[in-house]
Amino acid sequence: MSDRILEINTLIYNYQIEVNYWNNYYCSLKDFLIYNTKFLNEKQVEKIHNELIDVKLEIKKHQKQICKKLKKTHYWHSEKYYNEILKK
Image (cartoon, rainbow, N blue to C red; front, side, top):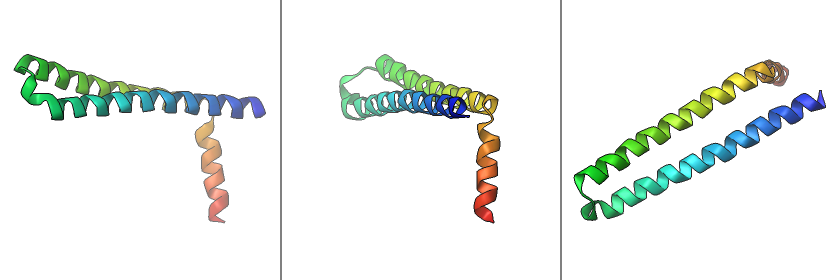
């Protein structure tokens, strides 16, 4: 039981670190684009826009991966059970 909990916590922690990294990168790119647009040519702006799209796709990919992994550890079942207990 404790091994499973440790595994779940490790998965969630790693996911949070990864997503925080990508979110910070995304925000930095947006800020760079907002404040430096007049110094960039069209090709550079387009490249940054494409990178922003890729970052969002990467975040979604990580979300799907964590959902798959948590389902394999039966995390959803235990959370559902916990929510049912709270309703009583």
